[in-house]
Image (tube, rainbow, N blue to C red; front, side, top):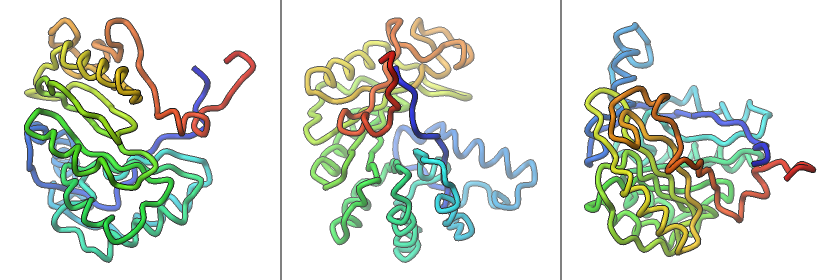
Length: 252
């Protein structure tokens, strides 16, 4: 695999969230926020309460290194409490940063769909929805026909089999298990089902990690459980952007 031309960073112009679905049960971001609160962090003095942080807006503009930004690892950009004007400012920063790629992931795709019904999606912005169980498969329909360069699904934490998947309009699927206290085990066949669906429908598949429980169902550190499925690494990006992301060498 050639080297990525891009660095990876999180960008959190908002923090905090509220639980709305099965994947939120053991929220890693909430646990981290509460830990920072106990350590005396001023930003997290209110724990996991939703906040907009205008002082963080210009971070990507000040970064000259091409970077893949995961937007809001500590929040949901389409949370009910975000001001439309602040969301507009975030999108303006994305538009002004063409050297970067931005990944948005939401558990509120209806709100994302409504927002982009009145404005274009910047070409360097990837729009994703979390689909962690069968009752949330309707989120796929909400992003399927949005006019974005990359539309993706995060099946992490994958808490049950998703069954048959219709991936029309989807470019990328990321799969992973749950980490942390009270984590739920991910069944290996659940991940294999998604891999088969991606292969059959021409969608890039990315296996992130096993989390707290390994492929053998044993509880141990996520580092020990690793990031391979059936002994293989799956680290594919959508073919239409791989040429941009990767640095080619004579040995490829």
